[in-house]
Length: 91
Image (tube, rainbow, N blue to C red; front, side, top):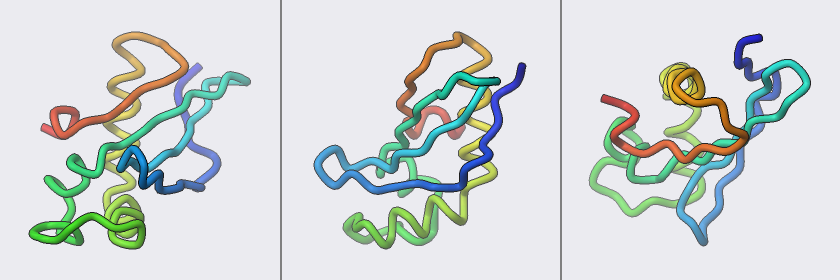
């Protein structure tokens, strides 16, 4: 099976400064975190400003395609049930 993202939900975790989302490989759920620093590096919404929930979620939404691509790439290298995507994953 391949990794898909049928549920567009995402949430911000201000303690860890990440956006959480999930994908599915068949019946298996795969959880992901995207560091705010990764969103800042790639998203115009955060450049030069302090990350906030609204800004991080807006950056995630504008980068959704590239985030999903990075998630699929990470998953293809080693299939696990949890990943943290960093700025290095968006090179």
